[in-house]
Length: 80
Image (tube, rainbow, N blue to C red):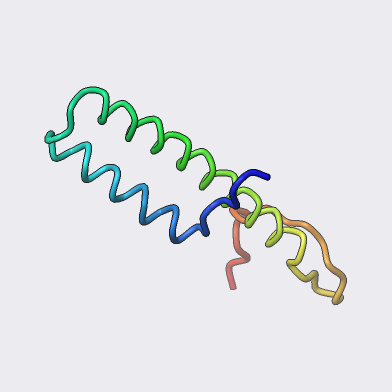
């Protein structure tokens, strides 16, 4: 059974730590490549989590009559 992916916050913290390690310039080539690969995988997982969260928000957004309907998150707001 594959390990459970980290929470969004934990994944983001780990990604930030990896970036700091890479930017420090103190890693050898193999270590840097390994950290970079981990960072790419984390980034992809975080993007999937964000897309899922956006989908859930769109599904749960209530319509004016109380029904639930999907609306894009970036839809222009009514100017009142």
